[in-house]
Image 1 (tube, rainbow, N blue to C red):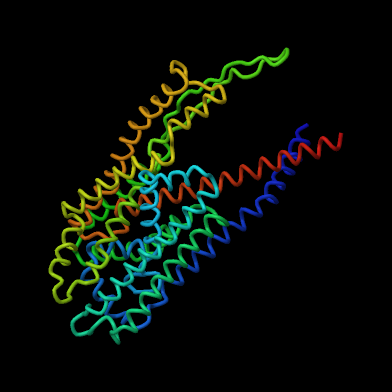
Image 2 (image 1 turned 90 degrees about the vertical axis):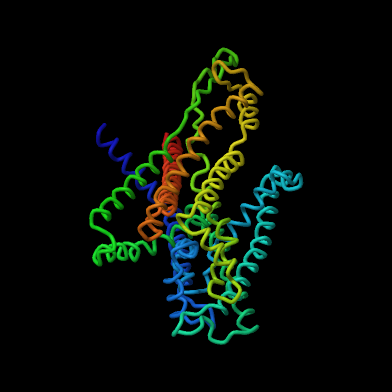
Amino acid sequence: MASAAEQLAANLNFGVLGKATELKKRIWFTLGVLIIYRLGTYIPVPGVDAAVMAEILRQHGGGILGMFNMFSGGALGRMTVFALNIMPYITAAIIIQLMTAVSPRLEALKKEGEPGRRKMNQYTRYLTVLIALFQAWGIAIGLESMSAGALGGAVISPGWFFRISCVVTLVGGTMFLMWLGEQITARGVGNGASLIIFAGIVANLPSALAGTLELARTGALSAFFIIILFVLATIVIFLVVFIERAQRRIVVQYPKRQVGNRMFGGDSTHLPLKLNTSGVIPPIFASSLLLLPATVAGFSQGGEGSGWLDTIVRLLGYGQPIHMILYAAMIIFFAYFYTAVVFNPQETAENLRKHGGFIPGIRPGQNTADYFDYVLTRLTTIGAAYLVAVCLLPEFLIARYGVPFYFGGTSLLIVVSVTMDTVAQIQSHLLAHQYEGLIKKAKLRGRGR
C-alpha cells in the first residue's frame, strides 16, 4: 500500500512538473521583458549631456525629482528613452477610472464585459499619449534652460530639432513600456505596470544601500541611526505583510435543498474581505498625480523667470507640509475610490441572493448590501490609515536626515506588495496545474478499470 501511494505521488508530481512548463515559460517571458526594460534605461536621449544631468540631479534630487527618479529606475538621472517611465499610463488609467463615476457612457462600457474593457483600454492609451506629449514637451523645454555651472548646459545643441526629437523619443519610450506592461499581464506573471515600477526600485537598491553606508562612513549619519533605519525598514516590511494578508471573513450560509430523495446544500462558507482591498494602488496613484504638475517645474529650475516654479518644487519637496497633506489626502481618497471600483456591495449581495446564499441574521437583498458596505467602509478606514502611516512616517526621516528614497515607506510598500502578488499568482498557477494533473490521473485510472 505504501509503495503504491509513493508511486501515485511520484506520478502526480511528474504530471505537475510537466504541466508547469507553461508557468516556466511565463516566468522566463516576464524576466526577459524586465531585462529589456532595464537595458532601455541606459539608452540616452539624443543631444543631452549625461554628465550635466547627473550633476543637476545631484543638486536638485532631494525633492520631487528624486522620487521621480526612483520610480523610473534611475532613467531620469541618466535622461534615457524611458525617463518618463510608465507613469503617464498610470495617470491616464486614474483619469479614466475617475471618469467612469461621472460619465454614463464610460459606466455603460464598464458593464459590457470584455468588449467594454477593450474600449476603455483604448481610451486609456489615447490619453496616455496626450499626457506623455505634455510631459515630454515640458522636459524638452526645461532641459534647454538647465545648466551645471562650469559643466555647461544640459543640451548640446538647443533648438526645435532637439525639442521634436526629445518629445518623439520620450513619448515612444513610454508607449513601448506601456506595451511591455500589457504583454507581461497577458503572457507573463503578475501585473505588468506594477512589475516595471518594482524592477526600477529594486535595481537601484544596491546603490542606495551603498550610499547610506557611505553617509555613515563619512560621519553624516551615525551608526546607531543606520541600525535604527534598517530596523524601521524591517518593521515596515513585517507590517505590510501582516496587513496585506489580514482578512475579515463573513460567514455565508446556503440552505438545504431536496432533489428527489437526496438533500443538497446546507453548507457554510466564508466571504473574505481584505483589510486593505486597494493594495498598493493608492500610493502609486497619489505619487503619479503629484509628479504630473511638478515635472515641468522640477526640470525648469534655474531658468530665467522660473521663480514661481522653484516655489512649487520647494512646496512639493519631501517633509514639506503641503506635500504631506496632499499625499495623505490622495492616498485616503484613492483607497476608498479603488475599493469601490473593485468591490460592489449591491452586485455581491444580488449574486448571493441568486445562488440562495445569505448571511446569518441579515435579510437577503438590500440589507445584505448595506451590511457589506458597513463592513467594507470600516475596513477601508483602517486600510487607508495604515497606508498613510507606512508611506508618510518614513518620509519624515528622509526629509530630516537625507536618507535615500529607496528606504521610504512608499518604495518598501510597492516592493513587498508586488512581490506578494506575484508569488500568489505563481502559486495559483501551480495549484491549477496540480488540479489538472489530478483530473488527468483520475481519468487514466478510470480508463484502466
